Image 1 (cartoon, rainbow, N blue to C red):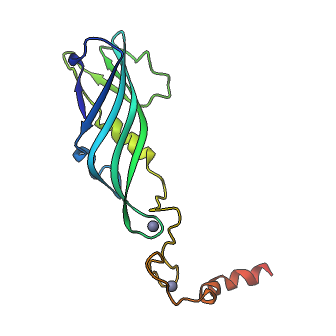
Image 2 (image 1 turned 180 degrees about the horizontal axis):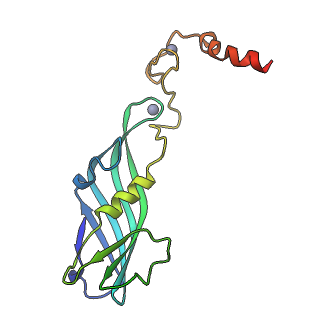
Length: 169
Ligand SMILES: [Zn+2]
Ligand SMILES: [Zn+2]
């Protein structure tokens, strides 16, 4: 997830990047990446700094929090960072900007892997669901209710709440 700043003569500039997802594999727990990671980035230059802002999207496979089946989905989110060359604190930083990439003198290649990883991690839903109407697993016998009905009666499940109900009455 690199680009070389020497490739560009004028700013701002819009970039489209595609990168193998390999560096991200294992970076986000329970998620496996499929296909490439795509980035659409706007790059601006202010003195010795660059402001990088854009969108990142990735095809992923993740476990449904209800039925525990793996399903494919797209993760797409905004990302931003400041790329700083030279010394001192970043002038562009607003304080909320978390990501800053420092380049040493004579260093021109920007590696966005960490920025992308962080953006995608934050974009991942806490409880992914394969589809809104996913019925999940039966809390009693554990069958996948999307695939089969089970014989557990409502009563059996209710029994577990009996003690609570008595308390309330
Ligand atoms: Zn599901
Ligand atoms: Zn059941």
